[in-house]
Length: 67
Image (cartoon, rainbow, N blue to C red):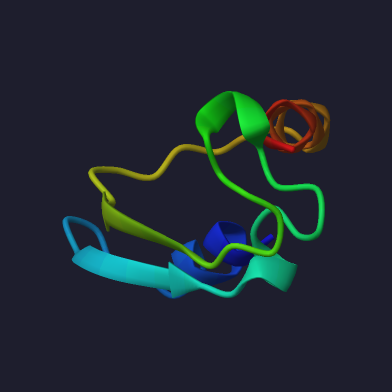
């Protein structure tokens, strides 16, 4: 997922605007419940406030919720 790849490069307290192509965002399905159409590029403004260790299981559960 595009956000996960970008966050790997963040430094603590860094604020960035992420522009993510559709194939790394929600793809051909989109997210109708969020009013994101199919094949839409998305843009987020993100600030990384802190780091927290997460187990493999927690990480995969989060990824499933986002999709």
